[in-house]
Image: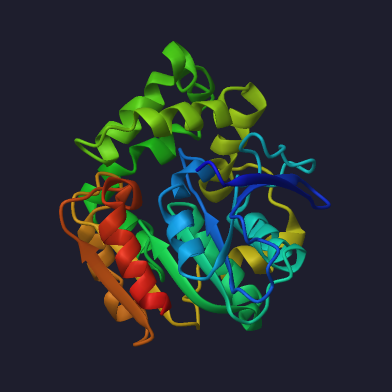
Amino acid sequence: MSEIANQTVSLPDVELTCLTSPSIDDQNRPLVICVHGFPDSAHSWRHLMPVLEGAGFRVAAPFIRGYAPSTVSSSGAYQTGASALDICALHRHFRGDGRAVLIGHDWGAPIVYGAASIEPSCWAKVVAMAVPPGGSMGLAFVTNTDQLKRSWYMFFFQHGLADMVVPANDMAFIDMIWEDWSPGYDATDDLLHVKDALRKPEHLAAALGYYRAALGDAFQDPAHTEAQDATQAVPGQPTLYLHGVNDGCIGPEVAESARPMVGDHVEIRLVEGVGHFLHLEAPNVVNAQILEFLS
């Protein structure tokens, strides 16, 4: 990623640091915004960004609000809807147009669903991974005990004990999560960046804040209610959804259950031999599918 640069964008509630491709200011190229999830960082896109650049796109990959070197939210808002609004603001900052593309993984998936639904004229296509569109996750919590078991960490994060357990022993909890979610993948390089993004207590609290805003009693900014609702919507744009068959975080059956919840404009593909961080485990396979869809 030697040609990838850093650019900081000041928004009213947060400063977002973005990794940007060399052509980020070339408005003749369509803009792509890549959005990471938990526990991850913008470096998650290091394999995809050069490929998109080479295919004629310009790319920005923010560290989402609260993940260093982006700042924590001055208001304390960590609804995914707040991040969806951040992504729309980045579209304006980088002078995107109606050709722009959204790509999101994990929390980044509902964030891009929200951005695509809030300002549909800004975005031409959506790519998402690891969290299906529609209501399949909510349904799984009620009907799928295997998925409820996989999602134990979401409920653990509601307890103050998590504030002590997650940072302990050089964030061994984060190592465990990656091992469980992407079995057999060597995440050494990724974990260095993840831990840098979460090492300070205020940044770790922000990362846990996404879960506490989703399932607990954390602060919810009423100004973001409409945007929050949009993160649960199915985007109206042509959408490609990719899910690893070996995903230890969200089972492939949850992705399959989303099929009747989306329209014909949403293509759901299961990718063999990979887990939750599929774009890192098999970048050549995943990148080729993304490029084919965007072409």
